[in-house]
Image 1 (cartoon, one colour):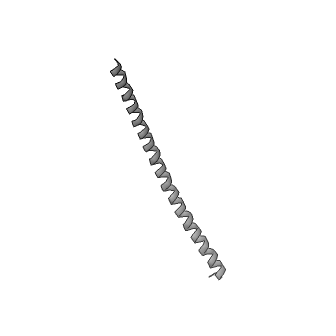
Image 2 (cartoon, one colour):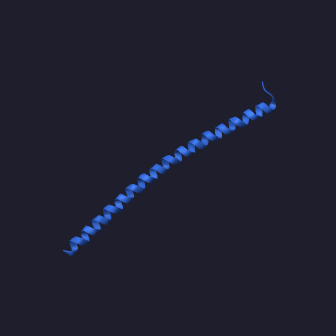
Image 3 (cartoon, rainbow, N blue to C red):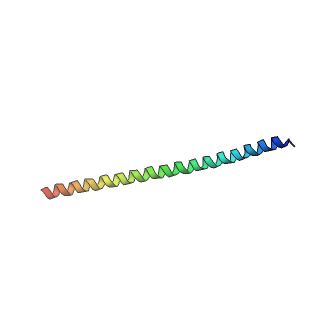
Length: 64
């Protein structure tokens, strides 16, 4: 058994490791959320492009 100071240091180290593990998990979740948002943005951008193309085609057909 170590001294009281050794136990306090070990406890602080353990707490820091737990905090680091929690931080890593939050970072992983944030990365996943970011990737989901990027995919959704790409999907929305594609939908906007399709609608603009359809609108342009309708305008072209109306002009004929």
